[in-house]
Amino acid sequence: MVDGPIERMRAHLGSFTPAEEAAARYFIDHPSSVVNKTIAAVAREAGLTSTGIMRMCQRIGYSGYAEFRFCMNRQRLSHGADTDERDALSAASNLAEAYAAYLRKTVDGLDHEQLSRLARLILGARRISIWGANRTYESVKQLSLRLFRIGIFNQTTSDEQVMDDISTILGPGDLCIVMSMNGRGSKSYGSLMSSLVERGCDVLLITMNPKIGLIRHATESVILPWISNDYAGGFLEDQIVVFMYVESLLNEIANLVDEER
View (cartoon, rainbow, N blue to C red):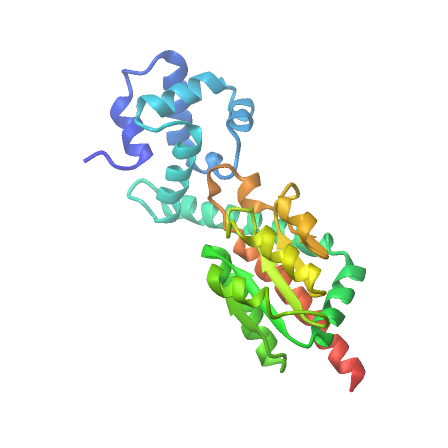
């Protein structure tokens, strides 16, 4: 049974065009070369053509290079039959290095004045509501639980009806934290955020999309490195970056609490 991309390439050897054959043999011999690299980068490093790589991917049943790369990475990380131990370790190492680079980028890019200002805003808020939808809600829960652990009461929701109710309750002295990494969360965020601002509530937006329209509805915005957008195919997980920022914010809050004691 032909399942993974390596098996598919081997099954088609001899039936490719010369450019496709060269691409297939390169990836069979160097499976780790595909990790987090664009088609142009692989073509340049391997002396191949982007067209030959793309046509090879399509000939073995993939929609394009992005899908082929995702499946190559998945096969390697799952220790497929054609992935030896050294290759698996190399894949894991590349993956760790990619995440480490973005965690460092997140820390190095921190606006420390803003971080301190937001920490004081959280500490001084009368009531705190934290919103997020879909996968981003995992980051919402992380922030919420960590705030509870240092004695800061808050409320979370991923329900638009609850958000609508909250937008009529919060006011001056309150804080609403909205997490929307790419803008595909709640369709009502914009109007609800504007309603909160009109009522005198502070609204903090945490996102990865610098072009997101919600920025104009917030009183303050944090834009984090967008790891899944930079690595085609969405192979890497955005929430790791969000977790790093949340931990940095919580650390600043803890430092302020210690100073006040």
